[in-house]
Length: 263
Image (cartoon, rainbow, N blue to C red; front, top):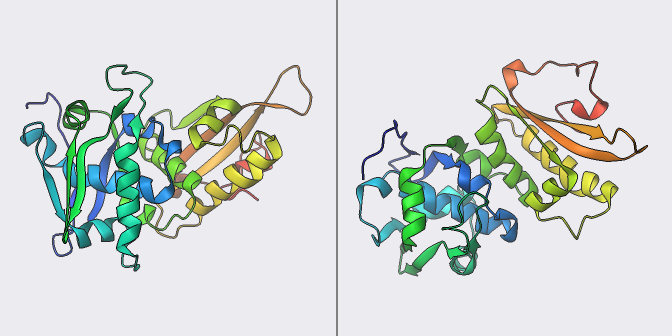
């Protein structure tokens, strides 16, 4: 399958088989990832990352294979995990139906038509329409699996995906309504109260990403209040900045929460 754009390759450690970084598709970042647990999200990235270099070169229905240890390291680094953790995540992904706002043809499709762990080999086959999406992706962000493996919060992991997409754009910020952000994080019902959403979702997620020593970027957040409703927030704007461009002091026009670490 030919593409009319320069498709970057995933960066792989050939000694361990670990995928260090890969071009995470924008459609995946904007999918219904909030339906998944954090280990499901890690495995989702690992399997697409391990498929990335091959997908445009093989026919749909191709059985992708990778050594179990390489998948494990891509998910968790050198941390020990019971095989049951990956097996459970794989079962969850097999049941997961992807939803994409811009592509009705794909929405409602399962990610895999087949997936299993066979002895020490992980095998998977993408649904044909998912395979086509991966093969023809031309909007993506440089996603670092090695750094993401250190995130323990599902909210931080999801936000980290948005950072990968927006960090190198001219407009390196994303402003959405509070309800839209709740939906993205899967916190629409459980954290309906603004104070809970801010303190249990937004602040911990931002702090966890910004406190990673290896992270090359920092995230700032700004609340945008209702014009005609006192003490109420209408939109939330996240700004994704490379660390060498982040100043020590916040901009005078922003609130205290625009600091790199949200207190």
